[in-house]
Image (cartoon, rainbow, N blue to C red; front, side, top):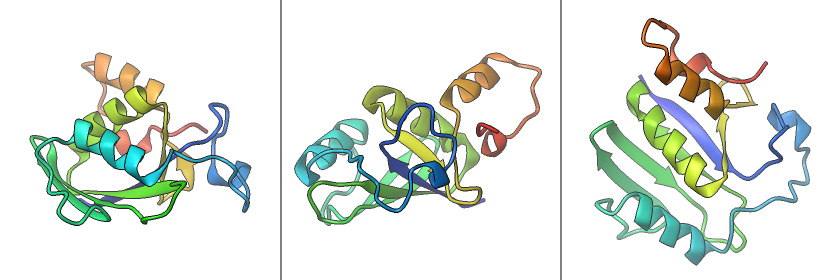
Length: 132
């Protein structure tokens, strides 16, 4: 199963991309700062092309696409496995960035993902844990 997530900064109360508007005033940081953060998050990743990063993790392969612009408004993460939510969750918690589900246009509710992780009887897929 493939999934594309956009990592961006947005207000905590924003539920969907529609609430941000066409003129997104939020940014993640300078290109070098974002790459430095990603290098800390994915130390074993291939950064030979910093605009097309490949990370092989215990949760599956992740491809990160980021434009070489400052400031960086967003970047895409292409995930191969649903288990990669752990990586998205950790990345967003550490950075205070937001994860946007490209299929729905809604931000993933990281708190709901945390709650779901603690609920061992839950059969919900992490792909469905966005705010409504």
